[in-house]
Length: 161
Image (cartoon, rainbow, N blue to C red; front, side, top):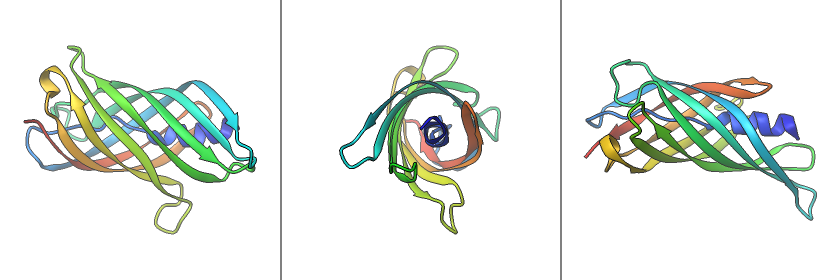
């Protein structure tokens, strides 16, 4: 079960950078797993609630959300033999000044020709301070799975009001 949690929680996910204008942008993210709780379901499947942290970097180091830290929680559902069923969650990103940007994420595809590992979508839904009124959405791809987290890439468009 630990490997499933690492595999899935790692996917997610990401604090995705944002632009002052609605340009497409991208970057990398890395997660580090923390506390998790596993619940076995009557059908033998498992639901894992995982808490993890994430660091996000934008391709452009002057980007407003480059080098931000996030606190995240994810829900991962897998079969009894650890095959992916679904995953989703949310993260709140913090910059050095304490401004926040919150986003939801979900896994949309796993182990397919188009997505050899785990891929999904994300969208901002709230912000404070500098990020008040943040809007945007995009996609992510997990590229590397570690025993205690993951890393990957993201892309999307976002803007500040």
